[in-house]
Each structure stands twice: as C-alpha cells, then as structure tokens.
Image (cartoon, rainbow, N blue to C red):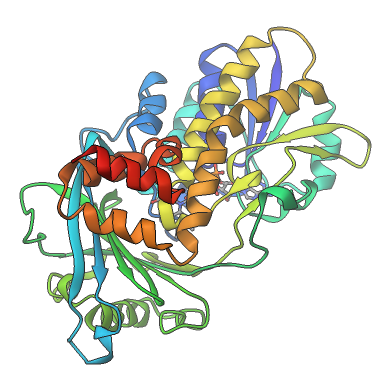
Length: 416
Ligand SMILES: Cc1cc2nc3c(=O)[nH]c(=O)nc-3n(C[C@H](O)[C@H](O)[C@H](O)COP(=O)(O)OP(=O)(O)OC[C@H]3O[C@@H](n4cnc5c(N)ncnc54)[C@H](O)[C@@H]3O)c2cc1C
C-alpha cells in the first residue's frame, strides 16, 4: 500500500491520518508532542466548528465527543454603541440579535480531541513518531514515502512555503488574541434555553467572543478578546500569571461589554493552562515546498492558508482541507504525487478556502456602511440574522449579499 508521511498532529494532520489509515494507507504521523503532553498542555484555540466541518468528522466516525459537547444552536452579534464606553459602565448596545444555525456547531478543546485522536491512530496500528521535525529531517525521510504532507500549523516549517503576496493583503498581525477558559459563566438572559457563539463588536477597539466548549473538566465557556494592535485590549503580551490574565479579561469586559461582564462575575479558570495570548499575520502561502535535495512536500491547512480567528474558521478550514486532500489522494490511485498533482489538490481546496480568506480579511477592516446596515437590519429581520449566522458554516454565501453595497441593498429590498 502507498506510504504517506504527515508532519503535525493537529486538526488537519490527524483527521487526514485517520482518514487515510481507514482506507488502508500506510501512514506515519510525526508530532512534536505526545498525547499526554497535548492533553496537559496549554489551550490552543477556541475551535468552534460548524456543521459542514463537523460532518467531515462524522463521515470518518471521529465525532467521539459529539454527545458530550454543548450544542451551539445560534450565533449572536452585539455592537457596543460607539464612544459610550468612555463612561465607566456606560456602554450600551447599538445592536443585539441572535441568528439560528441550520445545523448546530460544537467546540471540543483541541487538547482533548487531538490527544484522543492521536491515541486512536496509534491503537489502530498507525506509526506515530514523537519528534519536532526540522527541514533536514524531512529531507531525510521524504524520499522513503510516496507523499509527504506538512500540517504543522503556523510553526517554523512554514518557512518552506513561499508567501503568496497576491492572496495576503496584510503583512502584520491585525489583532492581539487573548483567550481564557472558564467555569461558572451565567446563562445569557436573552436566550437562556439555548447556547450560541456571541460576537461582541466594540468599534475601533476589537471584539469579544464567548462560546461554550467541552474541555478536560467538562463543559466550560471561553472568553476570547481580539484587540486592535496598540489599542486598549492589546495588554496581554507581558502577562504570565493565568489569574492576572483572567482578571484583565474581566476588567476589559466590565469596561467595554458590561452586558457580558454581568454573567461573568463568578467565573474561575478551568485550569492553569486555560489561557493563551498571541498574534499572527494572516497569510496565504504557495502550497508546494521544495526540500534541499529536491523532494517536494505539500502544505496542509494553516501552513498554506492561515486566517485570523476573528471569524472562527481555522479548524473548520482544517477539516475541509483534510477532507478535500483525502479525496484527492484516494482519487489519484497509484499514480505519482508530483508537483502537478499537488497544485491541483491545493487548487481544489482553495475553491472553498478563498471565500473564508476574503470574508475574514474583510472582517478585520473597519466595516463599510452597507455592512453596518446589514448588521443593523439583522436586529429587525430574523432572516438576515439567520443568513449571517449560517454564513459561518458556508462563507461562500457572503459573496451573494455581503461584500458589495448593491448586492446588500438588493438582498434587504427582496425581504420587503
Ligand atoms: C486564539 C485562537 C482562536 C481560534 N478560534 C477558532 C475557532 O473558534 N474556530 C475555528 O475553526 N478555528 C479557530 N482557530 C484556528 C484553529 O485553531 C486553527 O486554524 C487550526 O487548529 C489549524 O489546524 P492545523 O491542523 O492546520 O494546525 P494546528 O492545529 O496548529 O496543528 C499543528 C500541529 O503540528 C505540531 N507541530 C508544529 N511544528 C511541528 C514540527 N516541526 N514537527 C512536528 N509537529 C509540529 C503542533 O504542535 C500542532 O500539534 C483559532 C486559533 C486561535 C489562535
């Protein structure tokens, strides 16, 4: 059977490894951490995944946590009234609505999921190598495999893949990220009967996302600030103490989103590794990397298309990339995995990924008037809220009503 090397055991690498393994491929998976190290390590994401991406996991019978993870049935948006946070506690909401998802979303802490999937891969006879691979390692190993895939996320191995400037409008991080996993968040008074991802937009300052998750200690909620660099939310970089991180998160909530702070007065961290801070520039890369001795490797998911998490798409895209590459690999049969095949496999994935990139990059910029009108209209017209929410599952739909003022106006007019 064909031999495949996968470097990096995250959402895309593990999903692809388990998928290929189930088809009889001989898969070697290289990870820089053991399952136990991942399980006990720092949180990595907020990893909210929508219906299509979850379905790819179900198709491979990898939805091990589906019955335990909270069902996220809606996606809500609140907009702080501009300028009103100048007064302590004075922030009001200019907009507040929740759209219903056609299929529910879920977030399973990647520490739980990746550790569990990695153990499953090994139990099923997969070759698991614990090693932080350098380019020289890949140069040595790749010639022994029919195909080498690099799914190592945003780590150092991306240096093998050239930045695609034509598809990367930003060359610096657009948000400073700060995540805290907590227990004890109160229900949201507007819809206590169902869970939703809540996006709180604070114009000119940043965004606060809140969503339920399943973590090592059961159900929890994630408080996730995205701050415009240099602004009042960009204060986490030097914070090492997790309790100080949480205290800062809450102070900012009290100041900018008091309606969310009101439910958060009793929260505590899930664990000492339940916080994360960082930033990165959204980047699209050329999909093929060349090794020093001439061999070729194909980049997967974040390695080739890394978007800012403002739209919560990276894990979704990683799942979609893994599903797309799996189909491309199987469909290629016994023919060589040459440069032409690699480019075609990536282009097939880009058909989906380009919509995510376009929408995510747009959300990082100040919204034009027609987008403000759409977000405002969703508070009056439930179909607009629902369509916006379901766009998180299928961002291609935003092409039809979001980017151009004429299309947005025509859509709103069509609703009477
Ligand atoms: C703060 C934050 C919030 C987010 N929220 C969401 C969200 O709500 N929804 C969503 O869909 N996405 C979200 N994302 C994005 C999402 O987490 C990523 O896009 C997704 O995990 C990418 O999957 P991947 O398989 O490409 O890489 P990763 O999940 O990053 O996996 C890469 C793996 O490779 C390993 N590795 C790295 N270098 C090496 C090496 N040299 N050798 C061996 N192994 C290596 C890493 O340790 C890691 O285990 C968020 C990201 C962040 C930072």
